[in-house]
Length: 155
Image 1 (tube, helix red, strand yellow):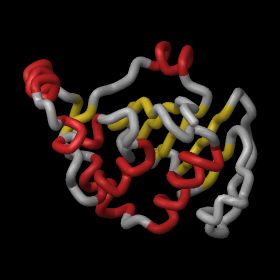
Image 2 (cartoon, helix red, strand yellow; image 1 turned 90 degrees about the vertical axis):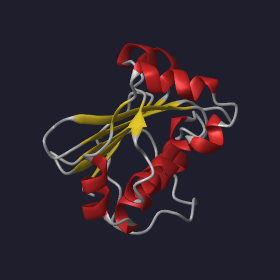
Image 3 (cartoon, helix red, strand yellow; image 1 turned 180 degrees about the vertical axis):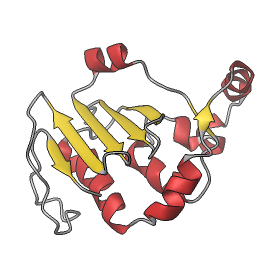
């Protein structure tokens, strides 16, 4: 189902490095659980090193991507369908540049908001304005965990 979401990643310096729109599975028990699973299982030291290399796309690069008929294959991390898969792509060094979504636009269109904040050492998931619930430390990928609304957890 097309439940739109917005992902952000803030590095240890407090810089916004990722501000990505996603079209699919934006519910907390979809993208939220997938992101949390990545944070629990991924190599976060390597992720953060690669994250610091990422920059916003230039106008010239955007023209190249727009002209590429295979852009979804060549730049999958720019696709609205990428979702939480971007985090493994970052760890693997595949993400060179990103295109930011405007916060005002995201607030208008999106139901789910997910922020990885390495400066504050938190993962914050917000859905339909409900906040301040915590994920447990147990694995959540079994999808029977019905995460709801806004969750804060330490990666």
